[in-house]
Amino acid sequence: MTTHFDVKTRKYGAKSEIFESFEFVIREPESHIFATLAKRDKILKGLDEQIKIASNRSHQPVKYKWLADINGNIRRTAIPLKVKKWWVELLDGRVQISVYYKGKPIEMKDGRDAIQIDNLKELVAHLELLRASVNLGDFDDLLT
Image 1 (cartoon, helix red, strand yellow):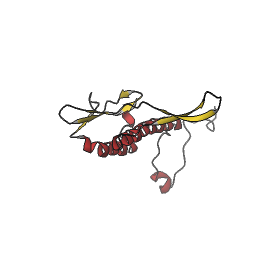
Image 2 (cartoon, helix red, strand yellow; image 1 turned 135 degrees about the horizontal axis):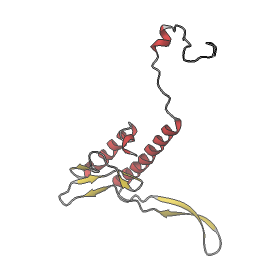
Image 3 (tube, helix red, strand yellow; image 1 turned 30 degrees about the vertical axis):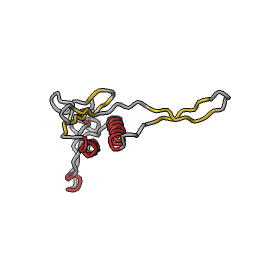
Image 4 (spheres, helix red, strand yellow; image 1 turned 180 degrees about the horizontal axis):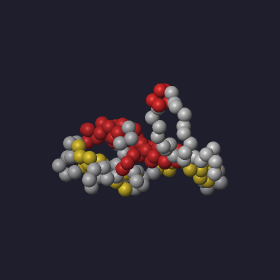
């Protein structure tokens, strides 16, 4: 075998300081990035809905469906959705907030899946803080 085709013994030439200043890493697969962003987006949509429910108690989320009436006319009709609240008010007035993903509460720390706050007045502010935390990527490693 000739040394021209021998990859193991081939020497790379000297590189410039600019080339040597780069930090070389293994490329992250795009599918992993897109999957993480999709999970993050799903939680953000849920938090947005919870913020709307918490700030306006009469808010009712709806979906639209095309339905035919008795005469055969097709109309777009709003159908109310059942959305589970992510918070529970305890007997002493405190509130516990859980973040749900795929119908289950996310375990945030060592078997703990809820955040406790003092009263309902702080609920919207804490939901906004949770939204900011999700945007920063704090929940990415919790979504497995």
